[in-house]
Image: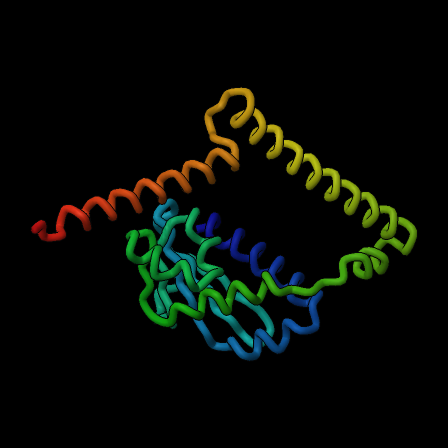
Length: 200
């Protein structure tokens, strides 16, 4: 029982702290107040119920009361639920089962994904202006370096697969192949039409 209570309290505390840092959260909470969502992940088996109040978000592993929406899916599918275009595809692929309002999950995720927190201001209030500026600058530099490293790595892998190992065709070769296939298809269609035409 303790394993269900402590994580819930930590989750609720973290959610309250994050929501309190964005003034616009109060309006979003008010619109969703009273809404209840239950998520059952196949990997966990036990359902997690999320209840929105006017001031917070509450989590429970033992709540069995009625909810507005019950989602049964896998952990890897959750990020895809942010885009409503994926819902039908996931349901057809038997990766998602929804009972109730499917838009509620997206509205709840927006509570956190649309947070607009002024992190430099929050840091400066806690540790001072100069240390906060140093931390923000260091974070921005490291993020920029990581993006550059990721782009370089992707380019290296692409070059290795295309040029060295020749596992993948170059873009020009692929486009030429497409053009050749289309030309061949046009010739075959023409031959089929000629064969179907009555001969005198």
